[in-house]
Length: 45
Image 1: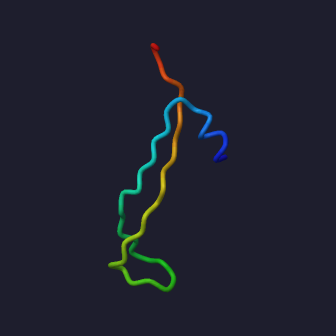
Image 2: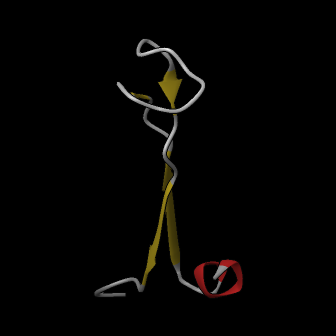
Image 3: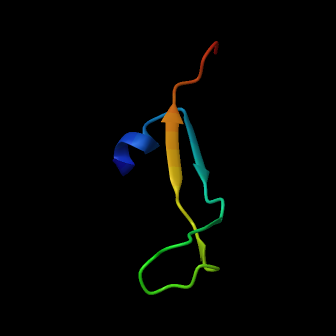
């Protein structure tokens, strides 16, 4: 998957923190970071 993402013209990543209310071994106030990765082709160039 990494190689496929790196082959795109544009690569965007986001690590916005979220609060997970129920997660084994962690309190309800802990911050978690889901990583979103996406890529795409440039349009119009």
